[in-house]
Length: 167
Image 1: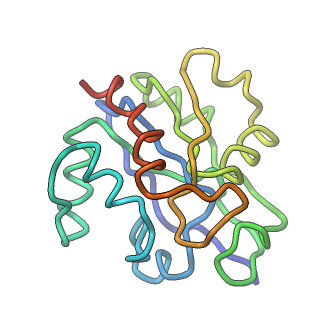
Image 2: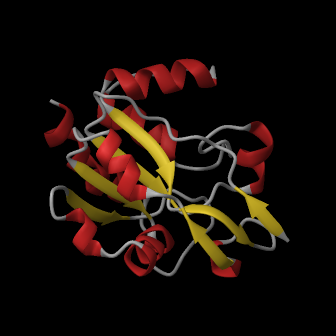
């Protein structure tokens, strides 16, 4: 099944932290929302880090991220995939990060949400593109258990790297 990512980047001139997934799940694409699966740990992790209640309204969630200089995007523009598993992703067409970085020079760190996001960026863009910014491969917030299973609290601790870039 060929899937086109129709979620635009959540980013503005004040974005300092850019969180990159690989490709939204089928549920997220249907809802037109980043991390739209209620079982995904992304929004609860953000709530813990920002020490706030996450709004139920998606537009309010996006406002909250932007208020804290956090942006969202994916490394993949389109691909073939059965279901929502990163393991089944084939025939990747990556997003255009060269132009994104030119347009948004205040980005200070890229956080790759899981291994697939990182490996796609490394393969198609190359890490040399990141000379001007920090980056880190984060534990996936996906509800699907992976090979490096961490508890929710362990994930929160690793994701706390965000704090030093938004304060």
